[in-house]
Image (cartoon, rainbow, N blue to C red; front, top):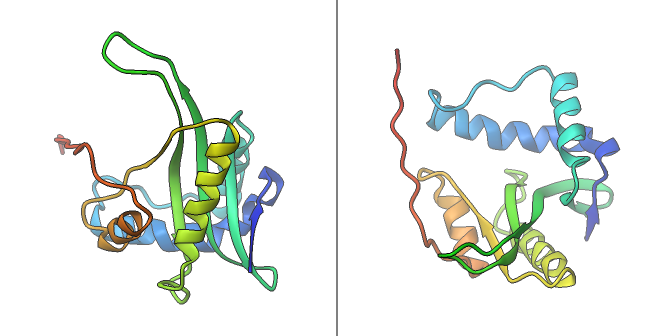
Length: 158
């Protein structure tokens, strides 16, 4: 079992897992999330996104099968009058195959993100997760991430 970097040209490999995590979000928050576009359009989106500077996709493989992935952005945040500067790794997506959960794959991906962060002198590993997603909340807690802010929203349904 190994952690690999997934280049933009291999974005197609993320689709089965992306469908799993997106379907979960769509089921719980249908007013917030749209159905995924056709696979070819989603691949184009992923390739474009992962081609941006400081965007990275990490995969957890066993026998060349992708069992989990994380999409991470290294962000260099300048200081403001009220906040210190920081370099952080923002975990935008993380997904472990539904048949492979609770085996340390998510923790391994977060540890790889933490290592990537240390390589660039960064200090903060951050993410957001949906209120309904207790599995994600548990993973983040096991990885040492603690909630520090709550994000709230109101939506007009006109």
